[in-house]
Image 1 (cartoon, rainbow, N blue to C red):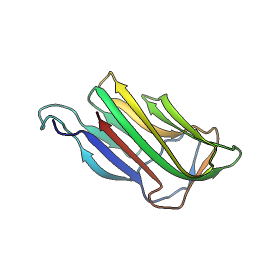
Image 2: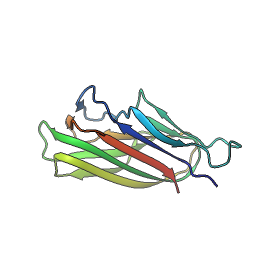
Image 3: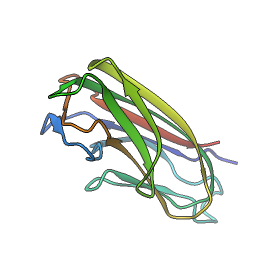
Length: 143
């Protein structure tokens, strides 16, 4: 079986402020290993750049690793990012480090086809993204 996965990054910053509840919008897909069944089935992972959502068409278990470089928030002493599955928070990482690289990972078991996965600011405040490259990275792979 061939690997199934996708890697995307946020490289160019157009607006350094990420509102509370707003998805990280990755602007570059670096790799897309879309089908583990040699084109004979519907097992792609697609990315919607306008919403920041990954659409996973095949059920199964997926490993999601992500990182975001931040430079603080307006009023909180922590930064929190959450992985959302079909708009429900699946896992979140809160960090007392308000400037630096925040990392997270989750093992997600998807029981329905066409599931959406996104990474969102769940801090309760606006987060300022860092002015480095890449600003954010995500890898989703089927295990």
